[in-house]
Image (tube, rainbow, N blue to C red; front, side, top):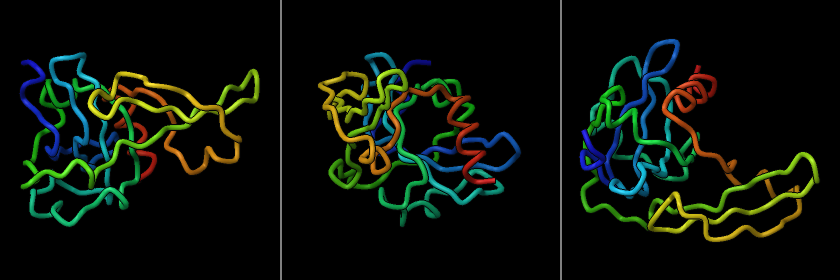
Length: 155
């Protein structure tokens, strides 16, 4: 199966490691270019795959996690697609700046990715380490890592 099976605005369910499901939405995607997506992820833990109607009221500000992630959970079907947002509006689901801390040097950076390609780094800007708390952590996670993170956050 190729990356053509999903698009921006698609909702999906993520199985949690101790049972139940979280929900996510694809905010940025370049399916034919590497399978790196930007997603917003939501609780609470649900006992079953949520219906699209249960997710309609969710917004970017309510996400428990914003992350760049690989598409294999969706492509392989272990993360079932739930439905698509009617009248998808990218501006309601922004591509945030991320934060990165260098342990060795003690320096902190704001990391900016291309708004059309979540795998294309545009630039890094050095910031005060105190500013990192306001930014999602910069990393690229596979499906298993996302499942573990969401299990820790929602269980």
